[in-house]
Each structure stands twice: as C-alpha cells, then as structure tokens.
Figure (cartoon, rainbow, N blue to C red):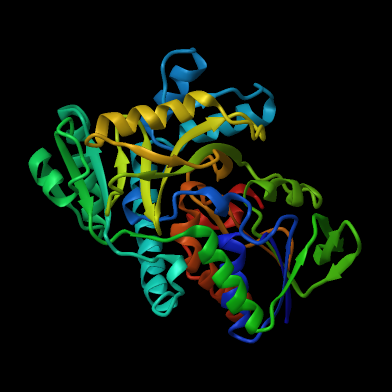
Amino acid sequence: MHVVVVGGGAIGMSIAYSLSRRGAEVTVLDANEIGHGASFGNAGLVVPSYGLPLANFANAMEGLRSLLRLHSQIDVRLPLDSSSLGWIVRFLLSTRKTIVDRGLAILAGFSQRSLALYDELLADAPADVDFAKFGTMYASLSSRSQNRMVSLAGRLKRVGVSSVVFNGNEARAHEPTLSSNVVGAVWYPDDRRLQPLNFVRMLAERAVKHGTEVIKTRAVGIALEEKRARGVQTEARLIEADRVVIAAGCWSTFVARSVGLDIPMQPAKGYSFDIRLERNPRTALLFCEEHVSLTPLNDVTRATTGHDFHGYDPSIDPRRLDKIHKACKLYLEGPSIIHEGEPWSGFRPLTPDGLPIIGSSSRIENLAFATGHAGLGITLAPATGEAIAGDLLDGVAELPNEMLPGRFGL
C-alpha cells in the first residue's frame, strides 16, 4: 500500500513513522522544511492536563469580550462572513457542559495513549530531543484562579489525570524560581516535555529508515476519480496513491476544498520566543491569569502565549510579547533575562467542538484526516499516528465517533 501524507509536522511524521514501520510505502509532502510549521515554535508540552476542550464556556466569554473590544485573553478579528459565523455558532453549541465533559474524557483517554507511546518511542531518543518527565505546574496569583484550577484538577482526576495541589510555599519548594506573588499551584506529575523541532526531525529520520520518502513541495489538491482519491497534485506533478492522509494543520482546509470538502476550522495564532534566565525553571510552568507558559528546553526556556483569531495573518503582535515579559516579572522571583531570541508565530488548527478530526472520510473512499488538534498537536501526535495506521492497514481506528470526520460531513 502506498500512502501519501500531506503535512510534515508532528502529526504527519507520526503517521509516516507508524505506517512505514509496519511495511507501508509512504510519501510525505510539505511545502516547508520538515517540522518548520506549527511544530517549530510551540511549547513542546505533552500535557494530558490541558485536556479541557478549547470549546468551553470560559473561552466563549473571552471571545465575546474581545468582540466587544473589552480586555480579553483572546483576540478575535475575524470577518463576519458565513464561514466564520457558522464556526462561531458551532463553537457556542459545543460549550454545553455535557459536551465539554465528554470531550474532556475523550482527550484524557487519547492523551494517556500518547504518553505510553512516547515513553516507548523516546526511550533511546537523542539528547537534543530533551524528553523530560518533570510535570507541569499551573501557578496562580489569586485565590479565585487557584480555586478554578483546583476544580479543573478534580474534573481531570475523574478521567484519570493525576495532580497535586500546592499552596504558595509548597509550590516554591517544588519550583524555587516562583515568586512570592504565587498563592498556589496545581502540579500534574505525569506531563512531559520535549524539544518539538528536534522531535519531528528524529521521527523523520526514523521514518526514512523504514522507507518513507519526504518531498519538499506544496500540495495543490487531491485528484479524484469517481469518489476515490487517485493521488495528490503538487506544483510539479501528480503523485498517485492507494490512500491519502490530510495532516497539514490549519492548511488542511485548503487541500480539502479541492475535493469539495469544507473543514470547519479556524487558525488560532500563538506566539513564542526562547529566553535564557539566570535561573531557568526545572518544571514546565503555566501562568494561569496571564495565559503564558514557560518550558525548559535544553539550555533555554521557551515562552509561549496567545490565542489570536486573526485569520492567516502571521504578523507578530508586540502586545503579546509584552504580556510574556509582564508574566515573568509577576510569577518569577527576580527574573533576569540574559538573552532573548527572535519572536515566532504559528497557527493552531481549532475545530468548533475542540476535538481533532482523525480517521477515514465518510465521503471519499480512500481519504483520511488527521488535523484540528488545536494546542495538543505534540501531545496527541503518537496516538494519532497509531490510530491512522490502524485505520488504513487494519480497518480499525479505535476512535470515538466524536473524533471522526463524519461528524462534520467530511
């Protein structure tokens, strides 16, 4: 079986690795160098703790505040056309508690599958992948925020995600770089972290050893014959395939449109830059009130923030960078930034129900999707690769209906 995978990020390369190690002939297409899309500058967190679907009531209220031009952690500047309005309506319908609770359980279970695969996959990883198991700490400056985090921890614990609640002193004892402003924290000991670009490069090398071919080219669209994908049309030629997988993150929408399929997905822009501190934290940190994360990676700390709905505008908003500096001063004890790298922006592919789209198309016989992972692309990559391999090679994806493409008529 020859499978063409459109997209060479963490998801695409996980699929290529999972398929090729089981004997499939795989070709990966990507317009950029491998791993230089959203996988390049993200936080590098493997976080079952981040399993609350982004389609939830709190985020809906933040989005409304942004539309009303009030202070918000989310910045919405979407054209109010039929596509974006349809997405917003679907998003709002998905914020009902029963739907959010079901999504939380689904993401927790899928994340746990990924954790087990990561431990196996990275047992002998190169040092520069920096796979570490120090957990993630969600730090709060106010009792109100801490109470919300403790409540969320309780919901996560019920679906198998363990946590430890700290008061301020206990949090500083565990992570000495935290400032006296921190009143409490929740630590998720099972979370992991890794250097995302180096991880994707490692996956690519392993996939190539199993026979995967990687081609740097832009996929123009899918070539159809009746209701079957004949292959992928690139800028240069048609690459024929027995199966096609669309795993191009936010850019998946453009590929799918070539065969008349409309993926309901919005790009949520995030920002990051690498810093060197006099004392880098040992634990990955999430600053709750400011929605900023810090991830220790090799000899630097990666700072990330932002859920900006600006379409496909890649420009850097200086206010987001200021937000990171402000957060470091509030949450860290006397932070001294020795060096600051170049800022980066990238797009998280966000579905209206907050769940990824994984599995075979209900409309086109030999087409599959692996996209819409939002901020959990790194977390869910190995489990996604395993699921797609099972689907294409065995006819068994073992996925809940809420993740399948058919829920959106794809």
